[in-house]
Length: 276
Image (cartoon, rainbow, N blue to C red; front, side, top):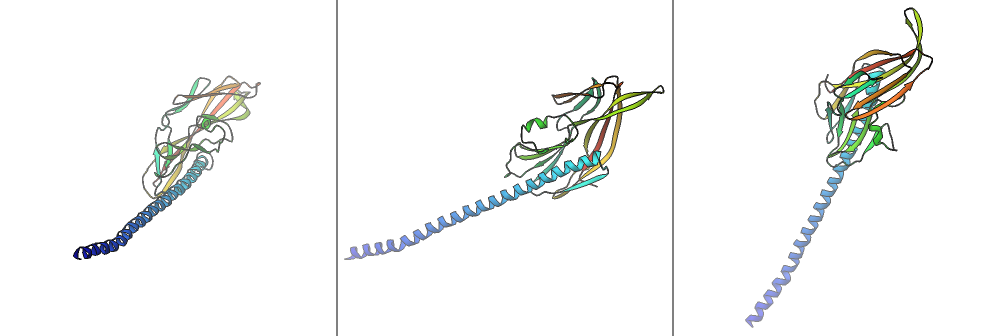
């Protein structure tokens, strides 16, 4: 009789214990699911926030390139672009691409020892692929980066995005623009002679006072334009540009009845800083 009572107590204990264990297990599973959902939602929100900030910074970098060209060869003076950065970073890099050398008819006309770059770095959750942003090139965009000699209507400053240990967007000025200006008379010993005139433009970016975090004003200042003139007894000019092992050459010809060619080289010095 006593044995039956003990078995009955054990059965009642088991019947009472099973719902408690089930409740604990179900509660643990539910809390785990909620925790995973919160973590996933937080990561998704953070990823979207980082991606949106990177996209906004890319647009500002494209605008900065346009403003740089206007300050350098257009309106002059200074302008600024304000970057608001929390998950995105900005770097100003000297000597990013090596030395740019330019010669005409085998005569060196200038070289830039430190070609600079402005780089936007996306947050750790941002992903992207290579794409030209300025100019927007969809067919063989890789070739656009290596262009060193361009003509009228093409941007001197390019912007592109890539993935290099993280999502980045790069602004660089490693090009020269060659324009044919026409035929003009030049007096030599009191005698007018016709010469073809060509202009070569280049923007040299240097960095001033840098620093700051959060809301950063990137200030662009025209520090002056250097103009030099070269004369050649040839109607054909052979332009060669070299940048860190990349070579590009182009030939230009003007009026074949002219006495020769005059090359006007205009180098705009633009200082980029984040201080006053």
